[in-house]
Image (cartoon, rainbow, N blue to C red):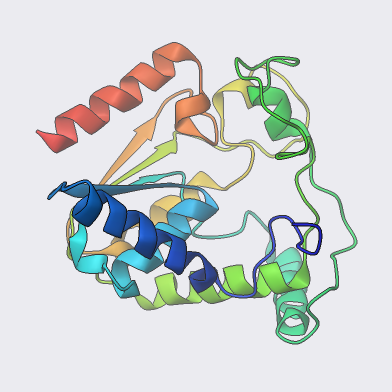
Amino acid sequence: MPHQKPNYCRDLQEYFPELDESIQRITQRDGHSYLMMFGHSTGGLTAALYAQSGKHRQKVKRLILNSPFLGFKADGATMSLLRFYGFLGGFNYNAVLPREGSPLYTQTIHSSEKGEWDFNFAWRPRTGFPFYQSWVHAILEGHQKVDQGLNLECPILMLTSSQSYSDGVLNAKAMRSDVVLDVPTLRAKVDKLGKAVVYKSIPGGLHDIFLSPEPVRQKAFEAIEKWLK
């Protein structure tokens, strides 16, 4: 809407009412009794939090997390700045961080560059949307809940690339790496999620495993099929 800001929230639970409605439609309106939730990146963080405290969490029988945003890719100094911005974001709702995102991830997935996919740059800009301090505040609160331990009871499959890349230059390594998040950081959070977590690293995977080249996507689908069986 004209008065809204893209990619903006003050609390990740702002997404929960839509998840409530979706689950109600799937289970009650459409009559499905077995429901899996799938989340990518920030959606993966939100899905994990919903599976812990959402209204219809008991209806989520399994959870698939595709490179979930469980931690920032940042060094100590940068994390200190992010925490400062997050603190300000608790009451300074319109402030934007003085930085722009990197176009590298878009370059790895969009068909005008090295990727296979065409999408609307108005909906997903090349350098992402502005980084609002309130959004940083919401993400850090979500990370804190994960770090405290979610103790989810439903079976979880977590997929990530086998490596990260941070140099910011489009090259062959970038085309087979997560250029957004730090894979070791994600791997370290596996035990924080729940009691029955299967972690699978996908060689050659991009940040979104299912936007990776077809052979890589196929390995991810095979991993899901094996996990379901």
